Every structure is written in structure tokens, then in C-alpha cells.
Image 1 (cartoon, rainbow, N blue to C red):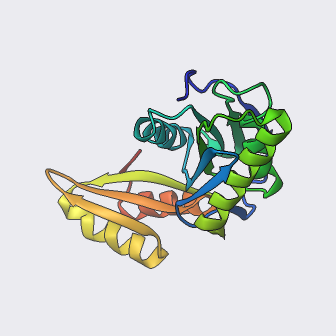
Image 2: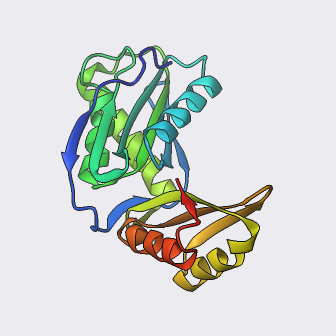
Length: 217
């Protein structure tokens, strides 16, 4: 299992308006090599927290495995131009496991994605070269099983208003064509998700439509 809390990262700059490639859904695969079983798990992840939660879940589900090797590439913070990259060998020889996973993610130019390869040792040592090939193959096949899709950076925010302004806010959101969920309690809250490039404009529209009576978090 993963023994270290994720801490190693490299941050790179990318264009916030650029379309990026990510996974369409979760995917799994099983690769058997000389008695060892390598199970690849791949998933989209909206941020570092989602990636680490996925890693923890895989480790819990495969707590009896010899190794659970993780890697991810995710947008970090509110600035999607920053990309956090992480990998961990989880006890395998240095550079033989985590780095090959990350290399596959980099080579396929995938972002907001997390992969874990679970290994059940079968009794035969594969050597560093054999491990690199095995972990790379399991990662690639898990990605193939998940499929890929091109998308643009998104953001989410919460809009809170009194009931009197809720119809105005709903109408503004609907006319903008964004995804949202509404919760009606003492006040009305709208959880909004939209392309990052459109966020400032929509917030200005909401403030204007309600004469500044809207709260946006």
C-alpha cells in the first residue's frame, strides 16, 4: 500500500484557456506477468484532493497487495494554469514504478487524471526494466479502458440569495447555459459549474441583475 502522504510535486505553467485532454470515465485492467498480477486503475480527478481520495480508496480495497503505486497530474488551486504532478514507488526500486506511471500520463498529455497500479507479487523478480514495462503497460491499458476526452478548464462557485431574488438568479444562469443545482432552505443556494473563461462575466451579470444583493463564494 502507499506508505507516504503525497508530497512530491512539480508545478508547470499552461494556458488557462487551452483545451486539455483528460479521462472520459474510470477504467481498470489486469496484466499478468511471470506470476505477478498488475491491476491498473485510472480515473478523472478534478483536483489534488479528489486524486488522493481515489488513491486512498484503491489502497483500502487492495490493502493485501504487495504494492499500490500512484501517480497523478491535476490542476491546482483556483489557477488552472498550474499543474501538480506526483508519483510514488511505494517500496518498488527507485524509478521503476511511480515514474513510469507519470511518464505515461505526460506522454499522453493527460491532465486532471489519477492512476494507481496494484501489484500482487507472484514470486519472480522482474528487475527494474521489467517493472518499468509492467507498470507502464498496466497504466496504458487502464487509460485505454477509461477512454479520453478533450475539455476546457472549469470552475465552481456558490451563489446565495434571498427568495425574492432567486428567480432572477435562476433566469440569469439558465440564459447563460451553465450547469447548476439549486438548494432551497432559509435562502436559496445555486451551485454553479462553468468554463473558467466565463466565470468573471457571469459573476458580474449576477451582481448587476440583483443590484449587488447576491453572495458569491
